[in-house]
Length: 168
Image (cartoon, rainbow, N blue to C red; front, side, top):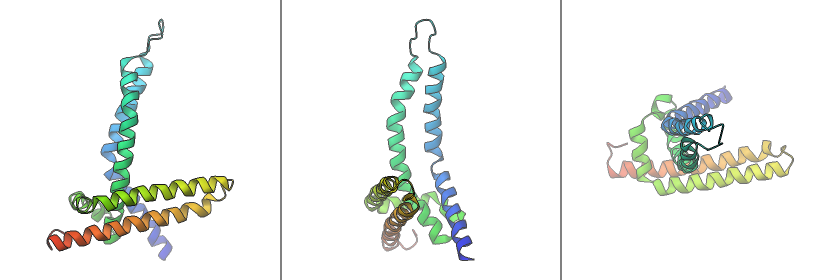
């Protein structure tokens, strides 16, 4: 059944993206740990805030934004690797994925930005329709994002193949 095959492929792509984002998630949990450690070390008598809390709070915001940008860049590459090979193992070819990303990083960045804007617009329109619209707008936004990422992936793959046939 085709729907089940697509579901399994989507699950593989999601798991591959999760693996690609493990360094980012470990970094975020580290900064969140600093914030929580700082909360528990606030001086109860004076109410002075711990330096751990301040450092964790200040560093968490830029790390979150950088991680979001990284996640959106590797989204197109990782899902493209899974879609091309139909396997979890193909999606974990990080060296090949980084070569693809280097070959066409501007288009991947543009696809990520436009995809994020489509998702945001879909959410806002769906919320304006009393949340019922999310059922209709988010699948359209996801289709736009996947189309853009697929185009960027295809161009990067073709550039790598043209540069050296053994690299792809």
